[in-house]
Image (cartoon, rainbow, N blue to C red; front, side):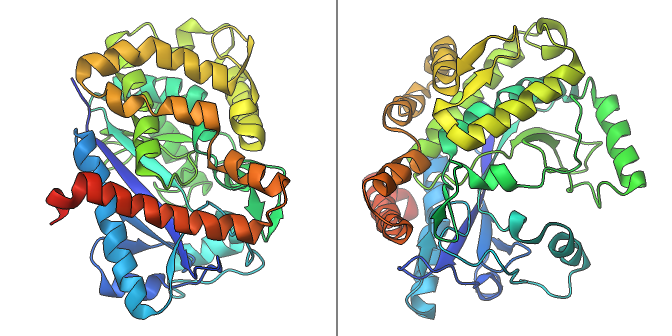
Length: 379
């Protein structure tokens, strides 16, 4: 059994010098498949659900090629890696749709803390009770996926002290989200939040993981991992996704994997543990010292990821996607994007130099992958 997978990708647009420029109103008007965010400086595209990693690779690349071609027609514009306003602009909100009342609420309530770029990974699970159990486990392990994806060490031209500034400052909403013991518990909780006004609508659940579907909270069919920073290299993103899928297959096959029965912590304590782990992963990503949800032992994010990798490798191999999982070794060995950028910063490259180099690297990587792997599919 392999699962359906899809992505929501948010990216910044701007100049080759790293200045982020709001173009989403033009992009959304001109191109199918792109939607605007409340701030005009980033734009989102979504891939169709697919079980095939090969198809997903090309589905990640194809919209970017279309977008790059359009940006070239507009002027000397490009796509900018990273998950924060790395080189400046966090002092103001640039509305993409001034008439949208929900966008009014977001700007007035959160300001530019939400003007971030990220990737949301959606994986299909149709049984709502299995989905809830999967969400419980993955919420407690979400800091590991943040550690692999961190790509926002800069804000307004300065190193912030975070590897993921995005998740370090992001307003998780509502402030307290429990571990959902059942689908009925989730429905009741969402209805209560909507009645209390702590959620403006069913989409206004901004936690690291949430159950998703066509009629939330009633009809649910997928787990949405929302914690990851933007991963611009599709091979790295697919490796992170393969780890998530293999872990989910393990959870589906083994009903005993459940924090409500397998942990030495109470459900309330588990919420605190995972909040602390998320904060640690946002600060130092793969080097973060985390608390394991099962027994409270201290373990680095890097070691915990390596342990899960070892546990699920056979599942990925049996299902035919282990070749997409194996590039995870490179991330563990060489560091995520934030760690690589900070290494350059430590040896004397300023933040603009780091970002402009990343802009070039990202474009070159896309061309390389398209030419090697997607040229026939995209022709």
